[in-house]
Image 1 (cartoon, rainbow, N blue to C red):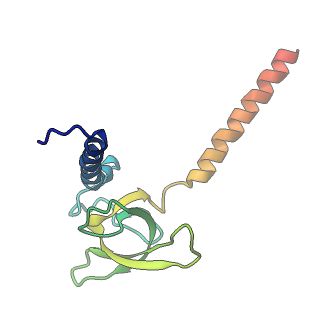
Image 2 (image 1 turned 45 degrees about the vertical axis):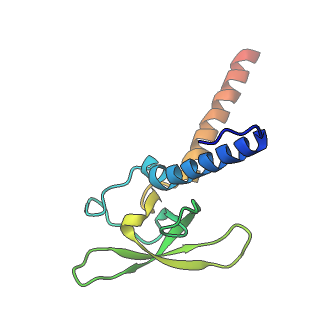
Length: 141
């Protein structure tokens, strides 16, 4: 520990410490916020068109996560799905990119066979609109 009278140096050192902690937290804890079965669990195999989250640069402290969608399942001799090809796109490009990832390194965000999130939000909005119209009609009576 250094004792210095420069507040700028203290702030820079604290920023470095915070950034290091935050990067480690992003890599080790953010993926755990989503429910993720163990890689050896066979409750549900990953399917084409599932939306996933993956660490863009494996093994680095870069903390860049990327959303993607399963594009292809890489077959193995024993019939278990261990690797997949993920399609993703940067927000500033119109070009699809592909990467091969191990299934255990992915976080499943939205399974393809679940209901459509946008449809569900639309239903909720319609119900709320109807409730507001009904309330206004009752208030006017």
